[in-house]
Every structure is written in structure tokens, then in C-alpha cells.
Image 1: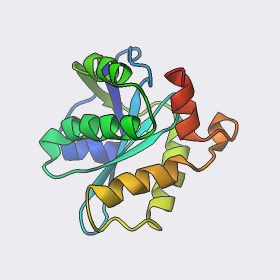
Image 2: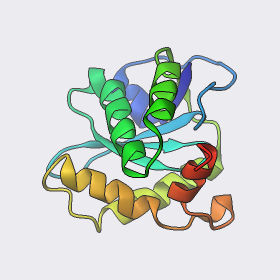
Image 3: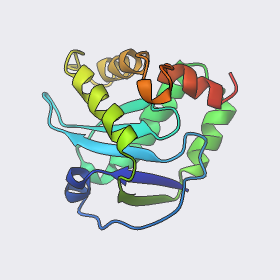
Image 4: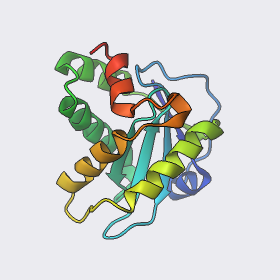
Length: 160
């Protein structure tokens, strides 16, 4: 089971009510989600609670944004040399989803920094440029995890 902690803006776009639940049982933990108005398309930013890894996904159509997120996450993890077996295991744990409201301001602050840096990345040609933007921003040190780099923190979680 995975928990998506959504901002008010994202909950409104999804037209969902929040549910209260404990914690995800995935390696990367809960995922924080926000909705961004960008051009040429709107984007959802997903940030791992544990490693602060950002994953950017086009929001349209909004009903399948979580499926596209899982596809983009798998592609990203493969790009940073996470073993295929570990990726499949992580995605299998994400079969059941729970949507709730955000609950950690530290993660929201990091998410805001990552959204700010996204404006300097060229994302005209999805999916290649969006994946490249993910990589560029995930290579920036994050103060909330003692200036670790989210890619390295993610690789440590998968024992790489």
C-alpha cells in the first residue's frame, strides 16, 4: 500500500476526500503530490517522503495520473541502476493506493524548492525532457536530508 499525501490544490483537481491512514509500506515511503500549472502541459510533482526524490508527471488525464507516476518512477529507478527485481517489488507494493492530505511541512518546503528549479529546465518534449528534468533536480543537494542528494539517498534505500 502506498499513501499519496496531496496538497489542497491536488485534492481539488482529483475531486477526492482525504482519508486518515498511518504509513506506506513501500521502500520510498509516502509520496507528496502537488499540481503545477506549466506550459506546454500541467504537471504533478511527486516527492518521496524518505529520500525527497522528485518525479514529474503530466497530469492529463487526471484520473490516471497515479498510473503514469508509477511508470515514470520505474523508468527513473531503472535509470539510476536500481535492480529490476527491486523496482517490480516497489511497484507491487504500490498496487493499493490511499489518498490523504499533506502532513509534513519539511517535505512541502523541499517540494517548493524543486518546483522553483523546474522552471529552469526545458520540458518541451515529454517524456525525454521531463525525465531529464527529474534527473537534474534530483541531483541537487537537499537540506532537509542533511545536504544529501535525493538520487544517492534513493540508491542507499535500495542498498546500491
